Image 1: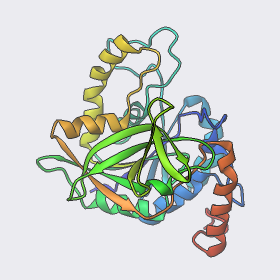
Image 2: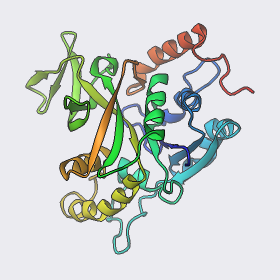
Image 3: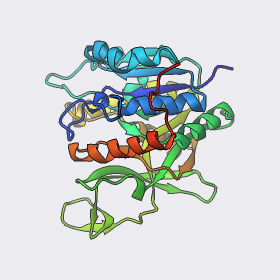
Image 4: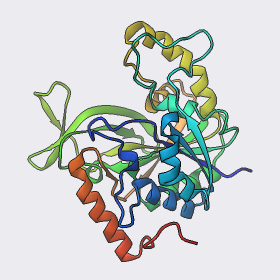
Length: 307
């Protein structure tokens, strides 16, 4: 049995961050967030990583992270291309936006064959527990009468920023710990010290701090890649009709449709770890300080990629 593979989504530009935050140094020795993520993944058991990037990023990406990691893990690259579409479809005139996270994973279909895999965002720090939980789940789980997927969930309070609003998928979980639904809240921010969300910018609704949210850390069996491929033309038919320039094919939407069809279950693995990310430039100092403290405490070695 092949070991699970780690797929890293790194093709997106950070619009609110105003730059390519995936390769912005945050560690004491110039490490980027991905250095810490991949170190944690390696410790958990992952031995192969697929970086999903824009082709024009490949030289800088290899220099900054890929070549370092390749001495410790098998490394492959998948390129998310806007013209990677099924036969009979073409890119709308004036479309420049990528097709979204589900399309990013679909770009790995010729690399990740018949093997379970985990998915992460390149610019998120998930914590060591997350990788252990998802790896252990994937090596011990197979589809049966349903697809058996998993997601690492975080307490909302561990994923907030002090510098603006965030978008989070707020999870509804049943008594057995399986995902029932994800409510996408595109504007959550602290008001009077507590998280609230708004749909219209005027009416604010409180959200419990211990609400479980998705940070796009998923675990999938091989069936998911087949479903992504099957559902992509269905998505395109609607998107090209309704919003051809901006509509995106999102991972949570595909998962949600499989849940509603009764074809899949998603086990929610709740981690106590704090998530760190750089949504805004003002977030960077706190991330730098947190990672420096982890290195000083011995959680990480002073230099991650030394033999």
